[in-house]
Image 1 (tube, rainbow, N blue to C red):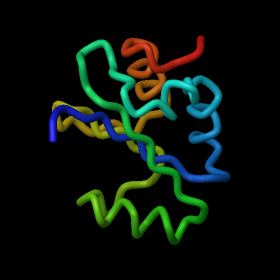
Image 2 (image 1 turned 135 degrees about the vertical axis):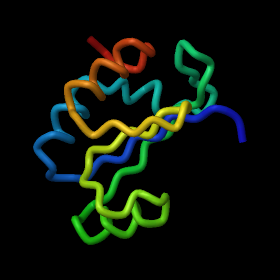
Image 3 (image 1 turned 60 degrees about the vertical axis):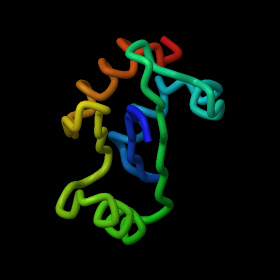
Image 4 (image 1 turned 60 degrees about the horizontal axis):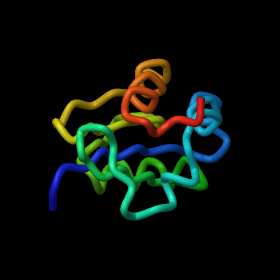
Length: 95
């Protein structure tokens, strides 16, 4: 698999809500969408805290709390304002 940014968010998570507010959902839903660096962009959304814990563990992110962004570079970001800045920089935000 090529370069991929992965965003993990949870329903009901206040910080995730702020990220959802700027996330370009139309772009997210298009499999061919690419960020400005040519990477794919995948969003994983959990509907409960238990599901979040299990999902993050499956991706080697045990102990993290959502939201989490794993950049194509391998860098991990959990600060909402930095995640939003990355979304804007990569053309993945609506505003």
